[in-house]
Image 1: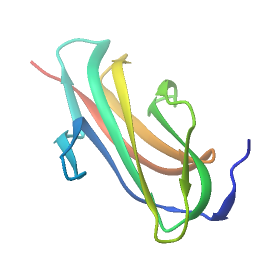
Image 2 (image 1 turned 90 degrees about the vertical axis):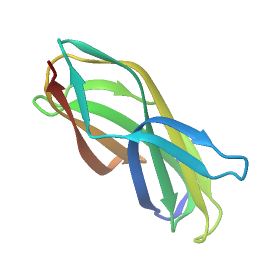
Image 3 (image 1 turned 135 degrees about the vertical axis):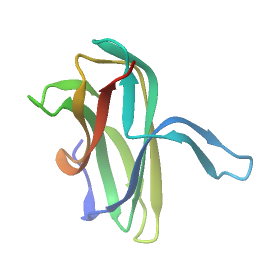
Length: 133
């Protein structure tokens, strides 16, 4: 089924973090925001990470996809299945939380977290894999 787009949404934020929790009042708690992962040897496996995205100022049904790719050759390390979400009106917002387990990074260097909306790249930002001692 194709996306029902009336007004394309904005990506209010995208956060890379270690964990996500929800308080009793519904507020999200993002734990361990980061942009660098240290590893003693490669390939390195990162046990768990989350990408939290909030979409707003749109109307319709959309598909989000997240990919992590190597900056050297754009090789995909991991990618979500398309995640459907609906914004009922321009004042609606929707937060999508994606968990990635055991992500294997082949070498140190820069990787891209890429956020797609209906297969269009909306945002990408780096996560660095650094050699630690």
